[in-house]
Length: 311
Length: 80
Image (cartoon, rainbow over all chains, first blue to last red; front, side, top):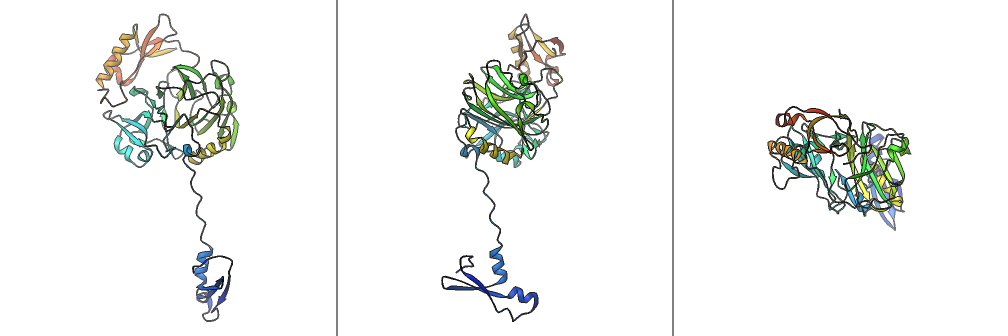
């Protein structure tokens, strides 16, 4: 029988033979349970008694715990079936290659780029709907590797959008429906950076996390396309309109999207039309559901925050 | 708003300029690649007469020559 900690009783034995510390270490005790007895040293007993509990299991993959997304972009795996998360063009000779999330951080990507830049040509959709975000023009592709160094912010890789025309777009639409939900993780250094909701190439509106002007944060061109949004940052869970969080990660959760958004898609966008273009956006994760995720909101936000340590 | 770049009166001229730049940089490198162009052109659709333009980038001066400065009317909200 092993050294269990069941309902039996331990009592000391042979405690008077060896003095001092040695005596203590070599002291033995006998454990009996269900009429079966085991004798062990105190060290053995302590080892059993003080074995730390196993760490809690890591959070599950987000799209496995909260399925049904219409589009999902990240540099981490959001579901087991994900293979490649991005396609990258290296600046040295314009060769392109797909990369998994592991290959982004294990050196495979920077080996591919060498001491050059790596631009993202495709941010693959992990939802299974193939709503990939793409850019066919080299000078408009976001940067992932800068002179051979992977872009890392707060310990996580990101896509750098550093100019008004740097953008990834979906060629197919229909990912946001009435009462849809958006979960966007990114940060920016400028009040003119935001997340853009597009439809058929015409802007439906955009959300900027750091503006106090509702007309800017909710400047949809028709009706009200969302009725509730919140910004999570630091220890503050504040109103979307009244938060200024330049230069640090934000998670914007937009629920109950309403209005005619059946043919729209989402993209980070540097809305600074006037050169010089100093505004940047560090994009990390965008997940879009075609339905209201109010019931899952806490769980989804917790999963994201566990990964990115936003608040 | 002032823009530094290359202005074209027809879309075909802008397309040709875009192809010049892509050819110079050997794009697309393979048929499977996503990257087709080096730069793209924009449409100044709020201006009359409408025109097309490519914004300046150091990497295309050797191809398209010296850029010029011109006015472009932008919308209040971003339209991609």
